Image (cartoon, rainbow, N blue to C red; front, top):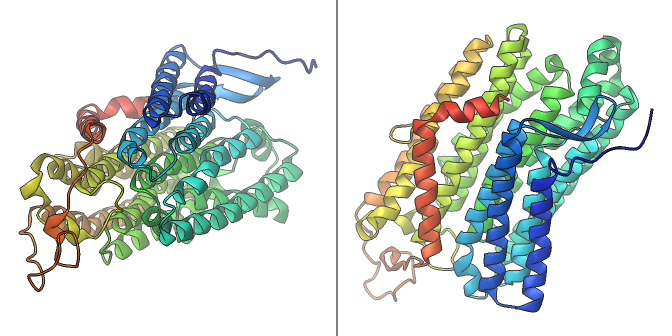
Length: 504
């Protein structure tokens, strides 16, 4: 067999565009040193990456770096969807970051470069066909975020969040790498499809403790990235300590990357009858703990963080149906994988809209504040508050947030088709629990503003000065908020399109 491989540069075009964006950002910052030019360069690069992914994905599946039938890079419909979503999320976060960079609170060159590097990892991740490419792409997505979380240099909470995120992610990566090494030792394969075929043909390998340990370590290591319970403790601290745009990226693009990586190994490499029970347990714990703890949150970003943990449980739930024989039929597995990807896409759009609204309602460079800081926001800024309310009811799965409603219906339907009715009941019960804090926060937006305590507090100072919040006026933030809101509405009206692409 020849070891000379042909390279399909068309398949690699989105990755080239993403990596090229990072290089151009560095050059723009070095040669021009103006934050607006640097930010524009990064934004144009992200838009070009999304367009390139659409064009390449429309031409059918393309493979490269192949040895026989096994390929390390497979760019098909789902990879194109992931690349487009990651690039658009990066574009949205760059726009949300305009006020932060203009105020000089973060260095524009480093900030945009790190986001572009993370985008590159996300684009490659969706097309990864072997364990090495998968893990390297996932770490390329994650590594820049350690620095981005700690870029609020005047904030101790930001530094603590960055250290927590770094330590936990290193542990997660170590577990994943160890699991991948043991899996290679047990099967002699690194390509996901090859590993799956070997484990399907040689069922005796599943009885080896080595294989069991390998599967467990890979799944649990990737569960850290998704912030699944009990590997979730880093998420609330990291989200709350990071700058608001970075928190938005963490809760959307980073989580999407973890879901894509976990789905890739479960769908192609690991035996479903082994991973199914583990994923079902993780789903139940994640959605239940996330919702119950979110009920007690008083800080806005921490509430959204715990909500994000609960949403990860809903994303994992369809994969839990693989625990049952009826959930491992070809049709049931296809429906489960499509439901997980579709729910993740709907979630990240709604989550980005929620964070964009919080950024629009808070002062430039401020953190997310408390829930009480948003009291009466709809009386002062009705359109921004309405966008936040729409995102929240969408995350809750209520009309008019049809995208969130369809996402939950898709998950429940896939569970019923897979014979996991009990898990569908757990999803439904948790969705009801989630209504409590989503609707409470939504009602706060239209509640009467709290009266100042003592009558002499300075504007913006003290616990009673919630009415003195001055929202940011950047046009780009308003554009992101409008686009994310419209996207959520459109996806709710044409949801089958996302489900069809996710199933490819």
